[in-house]
Image (cartoon, rainbow, N blue to C red; front, side, top):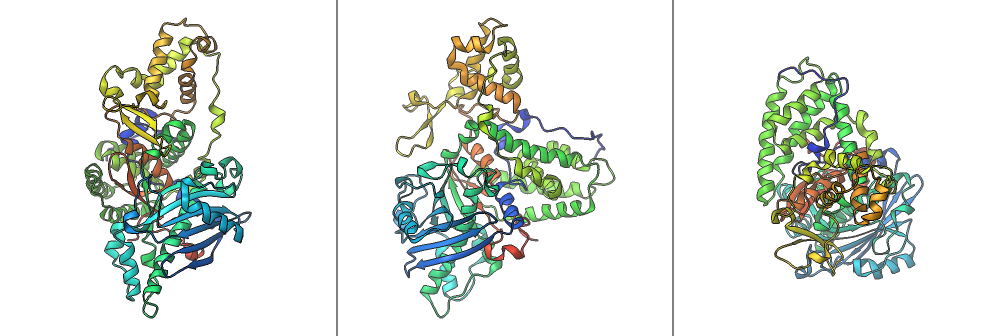
Length: 561
């Protein structure tokens, strides 16, 4: 590698580079991902976990309760197990029955709480939760794996490890609701609790406990089937099972409608990368750990399966990237200065975009002491960015648009391809959907997610206005541009707040937004089922609550050598 001069502090990657959908759709989990940060905190704060109720009959129907006890608060996952006919099993949001339904309860439920929850939780959206419930969820069994595991355990032997690795979960959630939806407790009521200060911690605590239930119900049914011969699952095999998840378009607009939160997440990740790149030398321990991570990632790629041609091609590209990287590591780091910075620069001309973003996660990985504090800085008070500075002039505003949105100004929205889609909310499920503007009706109900088009319209109006007029005066005459003005000023303060792509264009791939968000959750093994929904695995290889205190809570995301 040709030696490169590096500054004392490596630069942050530019939003023009990072915030393109093609790259955002290649993000991978990292040390800062919410699942991993949650487990680190649970371990650090000495949380205790216990199954305190198990009333499941021979048909697998009944209720179970799992308690999480922290320093200041207790929470209980209340699980309702159902006997669902196979023909009723569906991952679609219009489903109204599931194999299991769940609620994360604030505290320990009394008998009357269980009775109330039994009347509403199985209904999911059709029920009405209370402020005592923080999370509502449901899950279906894996058609391929669940029965195989139950039969194997009932017959007295362990399930096939190849099948375990190919599927990765016994059950998959089709929704995990929180933050006030369907009567649930609003985030503002629990945001000051240390365990829930950061984004989506309550939801991901629920998912981690759901994983425990999925094992227990399989072992229970095996015991019912063959009481004399059935065995429990081997802990090493059990850890290979996570929780599956099916996520569709309902999640996609989130990144656009929460720009300050998006900036906070991306900024933390890019800051972590900058800190590592700014290291003048690579420590021996960190170098050894990184080389092992590369080897472990090779194993992980061999068990990442998808039928989606686009993602399958990316996985094959990643395998080639790992080979190229391993060759580069033969002589790396040598005695060159700022070796991590040089490795990132090298990757930009030698690896695919997916490989580059995987490398970002891998170089961050050995540097927990340097970056883990950033995981506690990934929440934001969004109301702080809702105001508009009315003193900014028209001329200054146009300069800011050229600085941050030249890509939008260069887009011709009179062309059909540039405005081919429109976002709307379905009447049946009140979920975001994507329509084809020139093929379907409903564009009159379009949601305000065409940020690039709105900014360009704003700019055109500014062009015909007095240069030294203030925004206050301008917006009094043209109040329809208040949203664009607010967004522009926010992006000027928070550079990673805007996706630098046209969200209504024909070439926009919605799944890139899904994958970006899910990577911050800590998901892996993305398995797209179309350009609009994806299956993932959560907590695969993570410790279970019963082994939590005896294991390292953060060395699980890559499979062991």
